[in-house]
Every structure is written in structure tokens, then in C-alpha cells.
Image 1 (cartoon, rainbow, N blue to C red):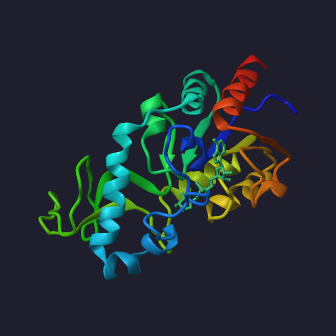
Image 2 (cartoon, rainbow, N blue to C red):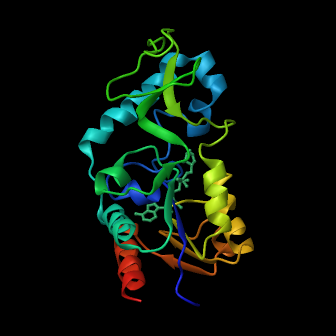
Length: 233
Ligand code: APR
């Protein structure tokens, strides 16, 4: 393979697991007995806003107790040193990629440390608990909600992501089960565009069959080794 120029990296909950943030579909993948799919839908938000806001308040508060791990730091190093195009697309709503120093980063499922106005679409950085009915500073209505893409809603930045995939020479998926679309379909789009595809994951995923290569192991071990290999080439 000629040296890649344009790299797209997709990350999932597995890259944050070694920082102590629970994944969704692992052994501890329930939250207070709720499946994520049951708590994170527009219907759940309408039916029980207190429960849904509490779910995200707990996850936002937990961010102050965790740190980026070696995998986040390795991707931030690659971002800083890679001379070609590079885009990190994360499904995660934590801020560990940013705190490790990543710059060329998009959150396709939203961010815990952001509040979205359901009425005017304005966003505000948000660190504290977000009670239902919090006031939007832009339109002055009590319409702030967690800035999270719920099941059934359109992920963010899909136009930019699809363009990057169409121009990618290398697509790397890290720490995701390949259970949720459209992210789970990115590997097929990248292959269609002629990219090499590599999966780094603790176990085989639903998408493993689509990758040219799958390396099994912990992200904290596989990602720094892969970045070292890529930068040395
Ligand atoms: N290193 C690498 N991979 C790991 C590690 C680790 N230390 N620990 C777990 N994994 C892998 C698991 O084997 C699994 O394949 O990470 C993957 C996590 O899968 P999920 O829990 O399904 O998380 P994710 O794929 O990010 O979920 C996608 O689903 O719930 C929605 O919106 C939510 O963004 C999330 C989306």
C-alpha cells in the first residue's frame, strides 16, 4: 500500500473504557437497569425528562473524575504530527479526546459538556446539572436539553464526515461494536472509496468482516503502537 495521505479515524466507547467510562454494550452496559436505547430517545425525553436529564447529569459529572488514556494521547500526537488530512470522528460524548489535545475532531453524537436549545438550536457550554426547563440564553425560552443525538435523530456533521470518507486513503475504527448506524457503515463507505481499513478493538465486532485488517486488544496498547508504526513509516 502506498503511504496514506488522508486518514479518517472513528472512535467509540471502547477508547474511553481504560479511562474508567463504562461502554454501552459490555457486561456493565446498563444504567440503573435501563438500556441506553430506552433512555436516549426523543420519546423518553418527552415522557420522562427528569430521568433523561438525570442520566446525562450523572455522566457529565463523572467526567471530572476521569482522565484521557494512552490511546487518546496517541491520537492527539498523530493529529499534531500527521502532515496529510486527518479527521477523528468520535461517537463518544465525553471530552477525553479534546483534553488529550486532539484538534481535528468531530462529535457525531453530541457532547456531555454542551446544552442545546430545543427551540432555537443555540448551544451553550454546560458543566453543571441541566434541569428540565433550563433557560436558553439566546431565545429566552425554557428549552435547553442535553446536546446529545438520541436514537432516531440525525447525527451531527454527516456532510463533512461523508466527504472525508470519500477522500480517505486509510480508515481506522477504534473501540466500537459496529452496532449503531450510520457510524457502523463508515467502513463500507471508506472501502468503496478505495481506502485501506483497519479495526482496533478488544474483541471482534459486528463490522469486523468489512475490515482489511482487525487487531484485537486494548486500545491503550494497540493505538500507541499503531500511531508509532504509522509515523515511523
Ligand atoms: N479497548 C478497545 N476496545 C474496547 C475496550 C478497550 N479497552 N473495551 C471495550 N472495547 C470495545 C468492545 O469490545 C466493544 O466492541 O469497545 C466496543 C464498545 O461498544 P459499545 O459499548 O457498543 O459502544 P459504541 O460502539 O461506542 O456504541 C455506539 O451506541 O449507545 C449508542 O450513542 C451510543 O455512541 C454510542 C453508540
